[in-house]
Image (cartoon, rainbow over all chains, first blue to last red; front, side):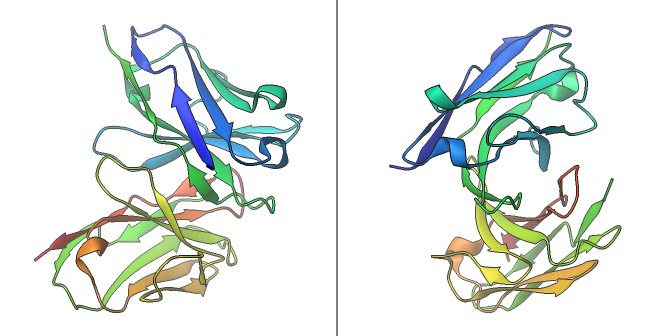
Length: 120
Length: 107
């Protein structure tokens, strides 16, 4: 089965850190750009970051640049998001998403999401 | 950064209606525009890419059009399972950006 499964969410204090993971299965993980997309409670979708197939290129949204780091381990079929200096407005469901496969960054496949809550 | 603006933000419709949702980009994105459907508590689902290409498995009552800065998503005959929130997304240039969403509610 083709799927993405996120983990690592939870409650963290402002200023703290958290590392999210996304396990991929059922497809050639190393062939695709991968992204993180988040959704604050009751709000719309916000693209966070993405990473090239071999990890050489990475791009970030303005709101997380300098605080979040995206990485991947193709041997483990896994995507990661290291989140530092967390703020209340980082509270959201974080989705892992796979691109189309043609280096066009729309998203064919999504995980179920993991909730990050930043609160004292 | 490109800003994506959807209109309306929400509206009510009845089963069988023809509905149109608009997405406007603050600068041209050619046809690098995708549409997604999201239901409560679920991940988004890709409907359309390339502004007008229907994703495999998506019913033909969904269609997309437009290029440059102005795009539309049309549902020709609204079904009960179509009540959801719809998002556009540009993938022409970084940072990638979504519209604010359009919620289609039951009248």
